[in-house]
Image 1 (cartoon, rainbow, N blue to C red):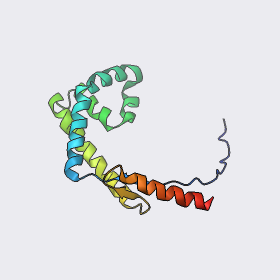
Image 2: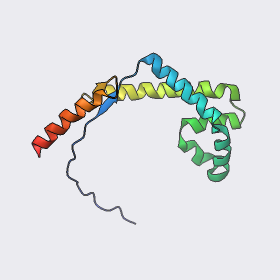
Image 3: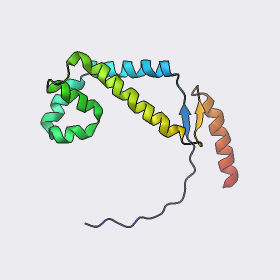
Amino acid sequence: GRVPPLVASPALGTIWIGIRVTPRKLEQRIARRAAAMVRRGLLQETHRLLKMVGRKRLLEFGFEYRLALEVVKKKLPKAALAESLARRTRDYARRQQRWFAQRPHIHWIRMPREARHIVAQWLGASARKS
């Protein structure tokens, strides 16, 4: 088959809003999320997916499944899984933060309700441009 030619679409206005979280709160959320993933059956899901799609495809699903597969293959102790997940997630969050920091057009807020004001201003400006 052939790839169809790229058709340019009209530019749509967008607004980027980021919610700032303190490093401590982010660490806590990441740790809770990692522990919850293990509690909710990440290893069982990994076993099931391994049978369905195979090791090679499973490794493409993300670092969470790579780490769980290490437990399944007895390369990582089960007790270390949640902490390993949290560590990898913290590393990923740092990379995301560096990427977002390079985008000056992002409106950073601390509380979700602050977004209302920013969006209202943006909608007013967008309406005036139309």
